[in-house]
Image (cartoon, rainbow, N blue to C red):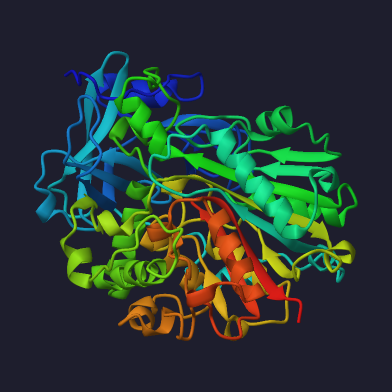
Length: 550
């Protein structure tokens, strides 16, 4: 059976057994011979017993439907929407979940926990393991989390020393380029504008800057950056004593945490952190044929099944949250409506027109249960933040914003489809870690700027940080009063990424500093002294607890 045009995986020495095992109609997975655990994705060592006695096992091909989403938005060659993306838990070891497509089924009749069985689709040198509903009475136990969401605090490592690096640093300057859809400006130009604004805001000069930090680094793919430290240093000639640029950090805003460590360690005194996106212009240039996408195969376990966006993974997390806790689309809708109400007061926001619950629920579907307004706004823009030594900060132009604590610990599986079931992965551990580094509590927070690439990101952070209990977001968010600017937890006061624009967490830091300085104008939260800012999720994230110098 052929699948013309379907994206195919890159075959490697590590994964060839998996992608070709269907040649004889049998699904095979890696196993640890020492403890009999199944392992996926393949690895040279067992994560459960650390044995290196690794082999391959033929399995039954029976599984439990552990999550699914009907993709309406994204179409690929050979895979026109709509289609069902799913995660299935393998019967022999439900800790292993495969991302796949459900076929030979009416999406309206699919249910979590339903038994399914493998059916292979042959394309070139690949046998793709798809799944269809099974007549079997029982496909095995449903998957469970390695750590229950309520228990992450039990697994946080204690502080190594009572001396905190956070006490040695401050945020002293912020800057923002124009933010908008399809600005059609060179991305490095946006970066320079934001950096110039941040340096001026701090009362510094370029000669004072001795460190550079960014995310994701030199890669400039898909409108995802300007070229990193390499590009900015080539343009400005700062000659930093310390620099950092990489994607494996504490979320998209992790460059700021990395800069704090450098300043606290004495490697730099004033670090310029920057982040640029130009995804809106990049998409326009692709439409015009001026940028050609790569047509080669990609390594990965999700793309061959049309799971091309973080939306697909998070949609299944949302589905399971709905199923377990009674959460509804309206629950997520209150987050979207709150962000838009705040954006109405922010002249730099991309979308400022009023949004009603009827608008939210009636918007076109993206991937169930997400609709258009559950997703952030691709835009062009750059944000810059300066991290300074605290002893220098109080001599600068603006009141410094101090750092009370950070949370960075990884406690969950890194692989998206193997991780936490009901919440965005890489949120619960970092949130629990934050509160071990401070005597402040969630009730002390005056303003929250929480990562909202999708509404589900934001809900996950709200519960993880303890602003309501695990599974209690439905009641906490109902009506939107608790998260309004005059509510218990003023949330994403500049409009968030859902309405202000996708600035990958740096816009949230910019807004937190603005609020804690008391410079937010019409959207200012009264007496804001303590703020929490999160950045990322799915990939390892970071969260900051900030306070004014008062």
